Length: 263
Image 1 (cartoon, rainbow, N blue to C red):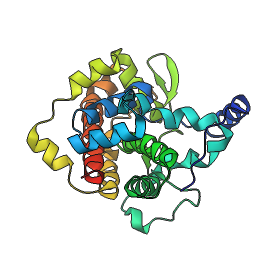
Image 2: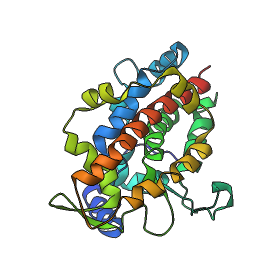
Image 3: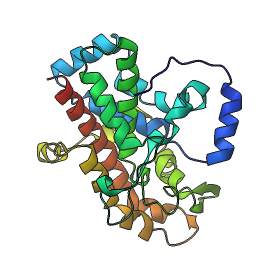
Image 4: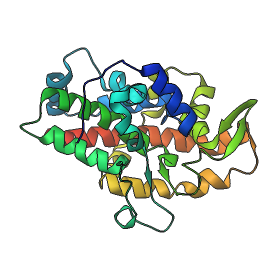
């Protein structure tokens, strides 16, 4: 797994290049990713909490590091990570049967990050970056359009009007619906973090590949409520419960994964 120390050179140039070339949105936006991290923080075991302090120190939480992987997209030293935020699994297929992106993908990166965190020989800087990536990517995995169907770039090609603004369907899911609520990440965490013990036990089952395949089952809802190019209250009404569910589910699963690593 390629990790490199952050370097601020050429940030502006690379940022413009990436935006113009790809137009890809960030998963969940700043608020959503912080919610996933904050929910996870509430479900960590004592051993996992201790391990995270050893990696990050006492003053960084999962919410604080959750957007690091988006923030370094514009740095030339991290351009190799750009495709790691999503995975393509066409309808009716399993990840194992797909043609893999040679630059990497979300599932492969999560699995590599877990190996780094379990390693007894990995350097501290490698563990720090692996953990920050893992926090972010488990969040991405639970935004349904980060598991793309291979036809519309994860909804980025679906141009829409979101209320009065020009958006695409991917951005509506990343940040559009969450931003309309106008809550801080701590407020939104209090709203969503109410899973029952039965739900938590169910959500902990499986692994990253199972969770990606589960995300595919939401495509009908995501696209079938996409009736016209102008989306607003009606679309949000039909989909907000799924947004809430995926945020808390992502946090619960992130914590379960970290708890399993640091048993």
